[in-house]
Length: 553
View 1 (cartoon, rainbow, N blue to C red):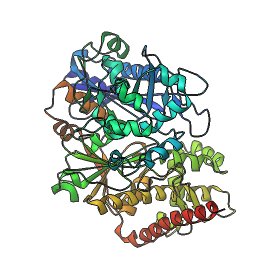
View 2 (cartoon, one colour):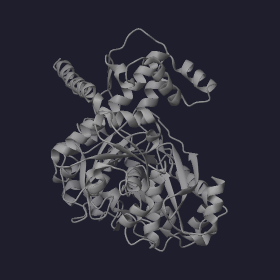
View 3 (cartoon, rainbow, N blue to C red):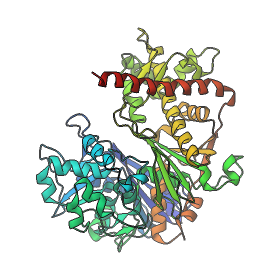
View 4 (cartoon, rainbow, N blue to C red):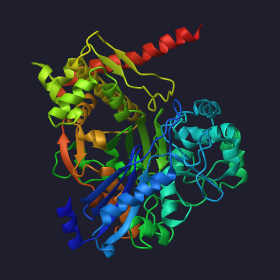
């Protein structure tokens, strides 16, 4: 990386992208062609005080952002850095009236002031909200997710009245970062539209907040949740404040972009890339033929359209929430990378896997992929799971069933406890995630989307087995980004737009988004995966049947 950084220092224009994920903060220095010339990553703490409660600290997150950014810009002429963009998980940040952290927990620990996106404590509140059948729910697939902010706010009001009374500001985490950088409380259209029920044409809907029991926000004229909304990539205020500039190691007044949710930044980094000369079906098709799949701890499926398309069980349509001028639909799976880790690390053969992977100087997943190749014999690897099937909703279903109460299922277990069995359950879990993607894509296509190509980015896109299973099971070619850190490129694209160096996000996407490897589906395996998909859909049918039987007691 040092040689790339030395080359970067020679000439050109550079942008900083900062990405806050579930477990770490990453920063990158990116040039105006979309090349990452320096990269840094730091862990951030997660508290899990009880089941379904996941909390973080905004101070911890900001400190990591500053340290990572300082690392990537060290040795670079500050005059060459033109802008900075932030993205983050859609977690809820709570501050008091003095802008200090305020507890989101019963223990009163104020430093734990972030309710994470994957926090599912507000299940009863989201049921109450969905029972209203309010018109705003039509833009979230017909049912709000517990991962959105209104149920979290309602939970705080009902369970932490002291914090509710003391609260001065509620931020989506991406907006908190732009506020820390600029001192401006502007919100991004991406966050408030996708997670808070704001609409670009009507703004906030008083009747919704009053109906669900959060009329306090209406009386305050929405001061606590945002009155000034900017499109992603628009410059925020006058740029970096003197204090933020010192903390980040960047010039005062540097352009700061209105932020994005992390998955949307990943979509921005890949979905608009130039594909000419790659013999892809989307080469002569509009951007609306593409879906960006951002796969990490969880997965998000981003599709855009010129006109609004309402997809049952899929969030949106949201106007200009990712690409200006286009409507966004967002499907998702609440646990993907987290599920794979859970299944593998919880298996009795995990210590053996860990030992053998370390001895071979490979990651546990590279070793598992190699082990599958050894045991497949004459079969294609994917066919090893003919008798083993997984339903992957160990953390509920986000799309397209929008059922928080669904559980994970495994059918086909034996008494075997060895490494072979661990490899097979690992493979079946990856296939289940890909089958879930097929379920989402088919729902989008049935509603009016015409999808020909998948664009993958995020941590799981580094796993060749995960990528090939998505190509084979969906029957669509998968395009990987040239830059592995596509989410960081997406954040840097925001900074590039805020700087004024590009006329539009679309222009920056085309210039800075670069595609790498293309993975084609094995069409001769289609019949096998069609049958796997039939079994996949039967699993959830059976789960609902036995729950109905037990609920009749």
